[in-house]
Amino acid sequence: MLLNNTDLDASSVPFPRERNYPPEYTEAIAALKEQHQQELERLSQELRIGLQAEAGAKAEAQVIEQIQSLQNLYKQQKELNIQLQQRLDEMEGLRKLEIENQQLQQRIQELEHAVEQRPSQEWGNTMTQQATKALNKQVKQALEKTIDLRSLAQEPPKENAQECLRLMGMALKNLASAMNNTQALEAAAIILGSEPTPSAIAYRAEQLEMLPQAVSDIRRVLSQRGCTWQEFWAVAQEYEVIKSDYLAELTTQETDLITALQNASSQPDRIGIGSIVAHADPYRTLYVAKGEVIQDLGDEVIVAWDHWQNESKKTDRYFRDELRFWQPQ
Image (cartoon, rainbow, N blue to C red; front, side):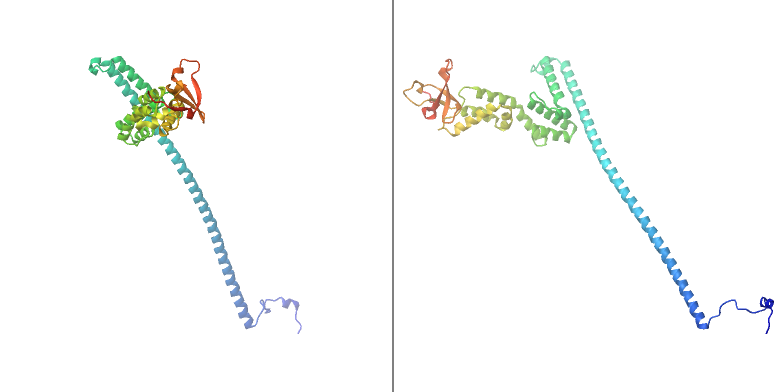
């Protein structure tokens, strides 16, 4: 059959527009399309979940970092607050101490003014106005030097330190009693070396009041020529309760002499420093003379004889077996 070319382009000519497949292929293609669509949906869902998880992890890391930063900031702020509180407590303590010092100064001035106003006979003739005023002035000066704990911490007293400390301890004890201040009571106990109770501090203060007299009496007996342990002990036993205190006030030479006297008393058969001796030979003129051992040279000793005090030669050197303990004739 012959066809015209124009007839091939006619709309009435039925040309197939899609490829035709057998039925089994069509079902397989449809199944593959369905499977492919499901796979695309699964991958899309996993992608969304992965993106959400990643965003959540980043957000969680940021939150943790912020929490850690806030915790560090809080810790620093807490430490700063503690330091500020300590500083405030120190400043408050200094302020209270300054107020207490001012109150003590005012009380001293009031007492001094009262002494000036009262006639001397009202004091039972025990003290004149001038003597009382002088005493109050001395107490005031002592308190001015010792009541301020800050100045004492910077530079301890150089003159009569023990008495200054005693006065300061008593001032703090009175302050603690008047104002019910526990810190002042504890400070007084530390200074005086006692328990932090009013009774113990008062007893310790009474002991320390004896210290100047104890040092004076002990030095007096030690300065006597030919002092023995018995003579020293007769005085020292009265101050046995403050032995450590008066020993701290004595010089090294004085404490060494006390030790020598004690050793000599515990070893009566051995002649040593401080021993009162005479010559052992009855045919020597020194047999009836009295002398004192002033130096120990080991096997020999140096003796200062009483009757040679006005002579150019005052001492001589002897072996111990040449001497004996002196006995009154």
